Image 1 (tube, rainbow, N blue to C red):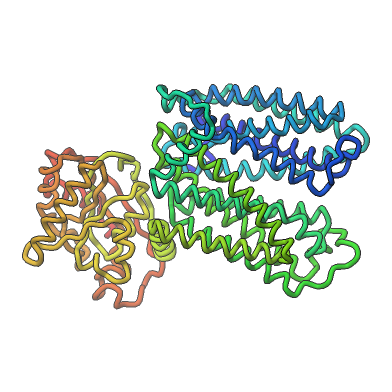
Image 2 (cartoon, rainbow, N blue to C red; image 1 turned 120 degrees about the vertical axis):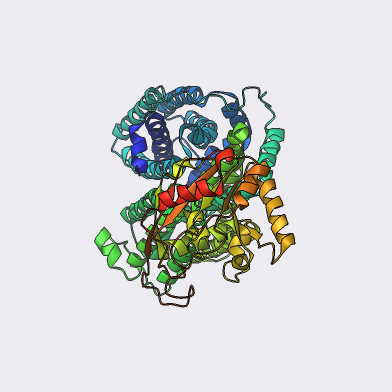
Length: 629
């Protein structure tokens, strides 16, 4: 199984990744340089109070997201995204040239205009950044690609901010010259790389752009609300930006006023959090098995709350600050509680990656391709709104006397409430979390030829039945969620019923036990297949108590005669002997001999419905399973 890093060797990903990395990097070199210039050296060009200069810059940069995101989403759907990227990068070169003029002329109007135009640049690029990935990547590459993009963006923001702050503080005019050369050079390189991005095609060639931002913004939000899971995922992404802005924007004040550190300690905390985010983003592919694993989102939400609250606990017994901040990193970490805070920020970064990467991948995967960019644009509008509200809430709470650690703890607790709401409304998140956690602890699953399972379209999966957890193993191993047909007694298991109901499993019973339920099951199967869904059945009709495969019953033939669709044979290997199997007695009544079982799923080639007899499919499954029970 290839690593996500292999994408960096492909033309369909590397030029885009490099272009977006350079864009994020350059944004932050310029923004950080401008903020420090206005804060420390702008007496002669600005009469604005120092304390509002940095927030004003942030507001000017965010404003275009409200004004132009809706238009940007339409343009991204109506035009080829590779061509648009080249035009946007050309705009970036012009913006940075204007910024250079502002720096050299000491002209605040030029600099603020450049900042506003840079916000427009980012607004135009935002819908393309995430909508182009599903067009360029296969389904099994989507999570890994998103992880690389999030990692790259995190590193670009960090390194760009550090470089911008460093260059502008160089003595005399050296800093102005160095910063100006840097931002123009990076913009030109980004433009050059953009010409290597392959054309992606047009998602909605007949789309007529509505230039009214108000009505189009409302329309974009309606696209999001049309799919409840996408809407709540977008809500989760926007909350993440609310949470992130609160945490990141208060690191300098927290470091100086609570932790007793200097500007180098600020850089240390920001670097630690950014590195953690990069690591968490990259780990998503490995933890999810190259599929959009919603179970990682609750896992990430737990970490965001736990580490955010622990920052408050870590500072409760913090010693009184000295008159002078800790002069070195070593002295800063020697202060009781500071190392713990550093670990907390690293944990926040790691769990941020777990939280945000699957959400972005889910929005990309489940949005209609014809208006995916407009969904992303609507998401950007909400992100900007949440960031503004976060800033206002932080100012209000701090003015009301809440401490900085208290503000972070309140935000972390609010995160828990928002997450609980989302997971309650869409129980699929919680269901996937339970399945993912359980399977990660008790089973190590090898996937063999799972790419033979189609990403869309109706089909039936057939598999041998070895244990009570077979459906959970398959749900973990297969990227596309199947509708399982299962014995009504297993379906009613009080421990597993929530998972099976949320996964929309179809309970079935023998004719002698419940003929009405049997007929309803066949009707539900036919409806699911007619709707283009994937159904998984266990044709043996029972869990093996010998380890051998029992003869397949004729239910599969009845299914494909009613709804002719391809049938894909699969075999589970290594489940016999696990504590959920019947080897050595009834399942779950014996002590597990293997705490973490090594099992495998082997997928065969599709069988046409006319040839999908029970005997043919049984022979296929036996061959796939081989001697490893």
